[in-house]
Image (cartoon, rainbow, N blue to C red; front, side):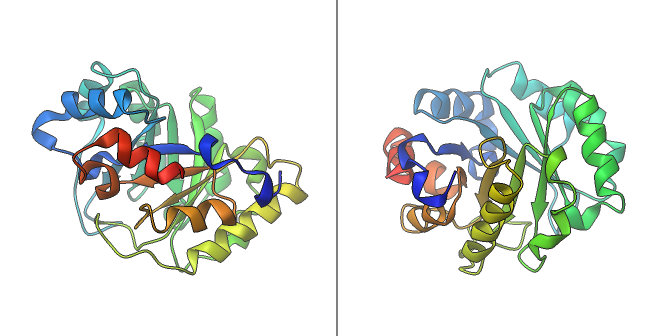
Length: 225
């Protein structure tokens, strides 16, 4: 698959629950499902790896009981290997871990796969893509952060587009382009989404670009255009 072959209409949209109304998580999950979301993106922050704290397995388990959407659980935490099994048990379908947080990245990705969940690897804005070249066969998704993780509503970092393109080239060279998603997270809206897709992204995380709009369905459709 080359960048030119990616159909914007088929790009997955994963609204970030971080931007939702936390007092009505069940309702928000229902509304994004009805609006055409493909996944729910759940940001788990520990106050150490990133300067914010969100929620853990008990909250995800409650959300799981209210939604059939695939849960894309993004672990922005130190020592993620300690908690992988707990998040999968709580309902994670995909667990993504930061390369920067894993001393033994290969081992952690294997651990995720052993649970039966899909495995993803995340790269912060400063991290070069070559750090993941030896684990591509263990991932179902590569997530490129287009903001510094920790808070929603930040401005998109344009340098992320070059990283997306380089990851696409790596996947094509490895024969994995059709098997591995490339996700972009941070500052994605109707203005930045087209450039992400053109660079090779197959999945977009959007927070305020969905939850900050009165019509979730229209907001999701705008991202695909």
